[in-house]
Amino acid sequence: MLTLDELKKLGSCVRLSDYTTASENELVVEKSWTDHLLQARVVNRSDRPKQLKEVVLFAGNTPYSPDTPFYGEGYQMLTQYGGTLTSPFPIGAYGTDWDFFRLPRTPFHKNLWTVYNLLLLSPEQLGHQLLAFMSCHRFSGEFRFRGSYMEVIMDMEDLTLEAGGSWDLEEFVFSSGPDHNLLLEDLAGHLNRNHPRLHYPEIPTGWCSYYCLRPMTAEGFYDNARAMKQRIPELRRIQIDGGYAAADGDFLIPNPTLGTDVKTISDGIRANGMEAAGYISPFIVEPGSVLLQEHPDWLVQDEEGKPNNGIGQKKKSPDKQWYMLDTTHPEALNYLRSSVKTMHDDWGWRYFKMDFLQYGGLPGKRYDKNATRIEAFRRGIKAIVDEVGHDSFILGCNAPFWPLLGLVHGNRITNDIARDWKHVSGNAKEQFRRNWQNDTLWYNDPDVIVLERVTFKSRTISGEIAGATSVISDQELEFHKAVILASGGMIVSGDLIPSMSENNINVLRKLLPPTGKAACFDDNNYIIGRIDLGNRQAICVFNFDNEPKDFEFVLEGSHLLYDFWTDEEIGVYTDKVQLRCLDAHCAKVLYFKTEANK
View 1 (spheres, rainbow, N blue to C red):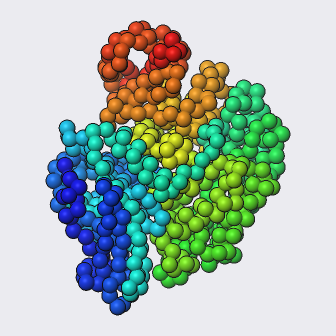
View 2: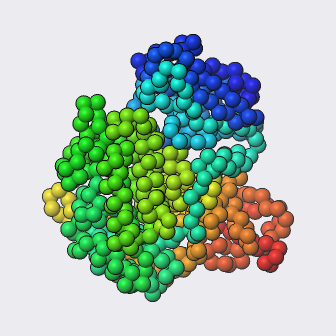
View 3: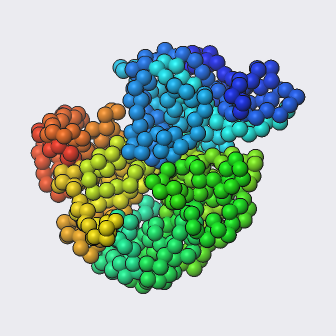
């Protein structure tokens, strides 16, 4: 394992935008340690301005074995990384930040793997070590490695540091211990110190149109509001998801297929006894939008001074490639503020899901030449929060995680769900590694819970109507239910409420109100998760395998166990529990009552 003294001895340097390394006589990295916490800054001691590519806080060979397991965060929600220092791989379905979202690579990245802002190493039998940045006010952090070689980087985004000037860098922590959960808990404390958490008095619940109401229509919203009022009013909110606007960027122009305007739909939802909740993608601008046609100068630009859509998710159809709203442009920022003000004041929304947020924190040329992409992103989100956050729930989605700190009440932590094993198991792998963030940085949103099999109709190129039927098994639905419970976060239904079975309505009731308590896993295999519910202790067992499997876990003392979903008595167990032949792709949730509630 790496010691703190060994880390301090690793080299530092400043790399310039011409891909050279600055002389130490011109640019120096100053470091100040307080125990295992680092505050650093870069100082230009020369008599000329310097354009900085990146600051290397540490670089060199380490004592880590090349086969050391690790977990690393991606720059944003859809990217996470695991494996070993020699054999890394992306955890999510969308690959790497540099492949799918086309984050730029430089010669300094060559032959090195990159993770962002958090690197958790788990040398076999030696405990865990955490390297992480504790703030993200201006700059994004990176960890690059190949086997035992490692670099700790601050991305300076080609900004110019004037002669004699200095910049404070983001704070950094290096910690070690036998329990990775405690290391992450400690990190959360440091992150909240630098980015105080935005609090909301409850964990929101609701229903989302995206996964079941196709096409979106006014009457479809009203039908579900009426059914929710009658069958499960505890969900409270009807979320009008993406697709209500005529084009991305034209927030207040309704899609003609809705049958009416969004204000009328919102009023109709409330007239049927539920709250109207809303959606906005504040940074993406669609080709063909009125915004692009009338205000191209409000968008992030390319090197030629034209609206830039050469970064971010690569669309199959180039004419669908999104542009990015530049929130360092005062008029663009005012447009964003006035739009959410209309949604709040006129439409009556008190819940805002903000989607595709990574597009606010991608590189490009902005109106404010001195603003980093992190500052531009935070400026845009803060404008929304300042306008409506005083009485509204603010939810991030598809966001760059560290730049989002302290700016939202809730945050999506997984890919979109779908009614198949690929998405159910994939979302579990993404979520479990981020459980530590729930009710520490924000309320985690594990995406919606889907309990019903549905068939979506779509029109083929030849004009025929085709149906796509759910392929999820009963066992996989049990797994999915347990994943949502294990998140401890938001509970949002993605099924058509009028046609839900009474059994599945009862499943939702079991999950309400949200517990606020995420599962804490016994180890990095993420198989056995434990949830402290106060009057009950729940244990979740997940079988990711393609075959039935036996499981065993420790149980302190002797307890009568119950099935979480049915409250059926399972039996009395002492010291350990053996589950025989748990079905493939299935999960079991048990609980026992605490002494005070027996």
